[in-house]
Image 1: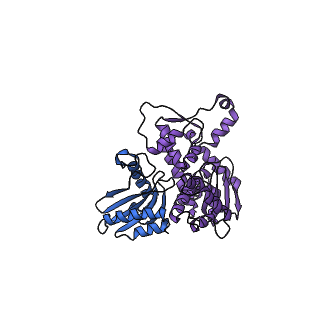
Image 2: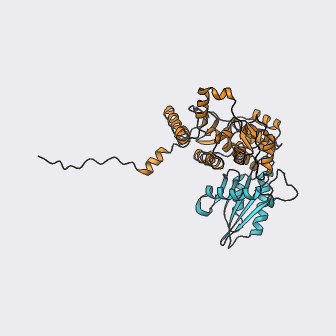
Image 3: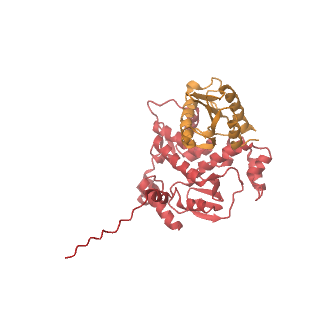
Length: 277
Length: 130
């Protein structure tokens, strides 16, 4: 009887560094790919839109966050007319941002500061887990023109960090999108002036993004205050009315659409990536 | 007219300046950074400095008496000193809603805290008013 003494073939080993590199598709694998190929155009995702110029984010918009115009006009920093005028005169050579600076409506520092804040704010929502794959259209630019571009990796890292920040304050995500009602806590903490102003506007119909728009504040800043107030027991997401709660299919789809469960978001990212191939 | 980067580079020209950043204290995001940072990571430093700034800005004990519930930042600046360096955090007062401060890290051996405080106040104003 012969004895086989050939050792079995070595099992394949995954190199950890390489594997980690491959597995990190960012929050949107499609966006990572577009950044790598230095694409120019617009990425439309379920909850927001990112404008890329040579692979870097130059502008972002979301229906859930007040835009640059809303932030600038809310407190009278910029007249609504000046904004409309700049947007209508903007062309390929000179964007609206350039025209606003040239017209002396804003200083460069103020514009950069407000624009960067608006980009990260809208980017947070645009990069939220989505239930539909994103679409990219090449060669489209926003009329605002170049201000300060943000690397895709920086926007993704910040978005993930912001999710963690909100989760640490209060893990329930319902307060981010439901109408908010006031509740009365017995031992309420002392509120800041900003939180007072926010609390005054909580009326049982407005959601956190609507409150942000009413106050001319960044939506993420408002989410931070909202979650802190929910944690303090001063406001709560309004209970869904009975008839909506009993319709099982939309409720489930809705729950899945807004989930931050890491397993489900991973599956969604995986699906988005496969569809984007 | 200075932008964010020009403003930070100007801060770096102060004697003893080791690093500077413009940070949002609600989110902890660094909107701009130059030079070094303690520990070598600007993002971590920004998040930690933002926590400190938020505490100072939100507690009534540190607010000025003339504008208690106002829109302007209640605190002008924060100074932290340790055995080898100073940190100077200067709140930026913007006409639109924001929560940002300039963070300057100064070497203690050749930094001049009084001068830095005056200059940072001017820079914070010029950044938004031109």
